[in-house]
Length: 99
Image (cartoon, rainbow, N blue to C red; front, side, top):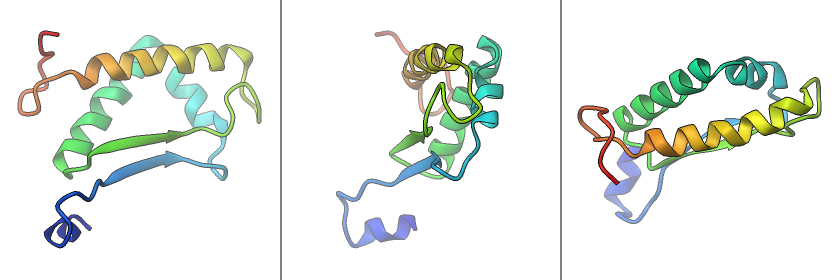
């Protein structure tokens, strides 16, 4: 897929995780602890960088519904903060950069 960039250098490749058919259980499990959130964010960043993706689409339909708790909605917002913080890392080492 990344070879498509040979034909369009402005092409952005984004990995989509989730969607309507994905049950909320996996999201709830990931949000269960701060450690789980940090591990998911770290592993996602490593995967994205290794495969030269430009970003990630976290498509959870819908936090706090479909077998998800009301707390999951708040935890998902917390996770997005963790993800944003972890995104600010050196691409080669994974070490956080100065802001």
